[in-house]
Image (cartoon, rainbow, N blue to C red; front, side, top):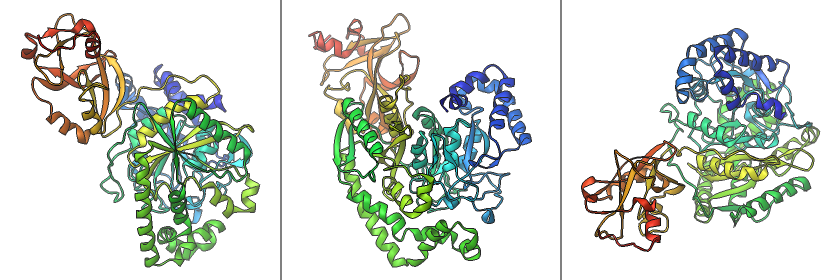
Length: 598
């Protein structure tokens, strides 16, 4: 499986495409040929003529992509879409043929991928109406787990997980209301993103619980998932649940990971051992572990499908249920009909309780940066699920059901293999807006779970909603004004140097002592700087407090990138001491001559 998966990784395909347009066509025709109609992961595949039309479109953009890859970041990457998400020219079935309809518009999430150069291969199988975590509730068949066919891929986004795990496509979209993206990702060894609610438009998605639904992402690793999220995340004025949340940042040092004090693995010793290995890896990395009370999470999980929230599903499907009950898979029919037994008073009592639980969980983020849990407590074979479908479904969701009710972002991360060769996955949770920092943390810790030598952790672009700032003097970590950065919610992301085009001066009569850095036309020095990411909402207020002769301009770093940073007006350094030879302000202070008088 690993060999097949590598064929459709972004780096491999893009390296091949640089050979010319013919390579693009050959690669995509090869991908399409591997995606056969008899595969239960597919409900519908793009036709050969439609694929050729897309190849021709991309061929006309080949020179543009070669010259500016960032303009089409997903150029030529094949992907799949769960068949409860609308795509023009495909029927949307939600895995119920009697429900099928032809959409007149493509869902915005899919359109943004197409606009970025991606190539749709087809629509994938799912638990009917996205109801279930088991992956066996579809008239189109069961997707066997690529690691062991006795087990399913999990659900409800079973087909999307299957085609990415087997390397048929580069990535796929699913949906996730209670774990439908995270559970199949964990069971097939993938990274699965359940974004903050409203971050990705859900317009064009068949509702499960419309106020909670999220479009999810299946990818091979955190770096690819991060890029996909940057393409997908976009406010949608036509989606009433679309929203923009301030980005949240992780500290560069002193990470604190919350974990439940007790975990239930349903007697699965292999799962428990895999989780113990994760805990040991976290400890070995020097990450502080924080004990977390599981009660509010457990209570929220129970409210989702064992409380009045199921009425939201009923409200969306009642009309179809009343006219086509016999066309609905029996366990799905029972789950939908359960929503008919609640009234408005039940719903308002539930809303009040959820608000209280959210407030309780908000307090966690003052003690911990992320919450880490196993994605699922165990595995179930297809036979075991068929024997006890409701019990298995309930058990698979104990560590996922609460996320959307509590307004959390989540990333399911592959964490190695169990002793029996099945994949084990953990989920990282954070408050809404923490999506990109969860992916960054996933990349940091992923190397500890791999049996092979990991590659270099990617250099992360600043998360949306943040501004990157280089500091050179009193704002450096541990120096007198550093608190201004931390008070603004900034976190340090790098210690580096400028390009060798600057000079550094000790400014006279400043309190606390400060340097001034200027860019020079002639020979200069590389000056030590720290790079911090700051929420953009706080950046303007921070800049407004900067006083002359200092100001915020653009600084060139040693790697050629440019960031905002502190610069000094030329008149202020005319009689100041040139300390450039020290290489930086901290080194100058350490040399024992901290006076700032010229």
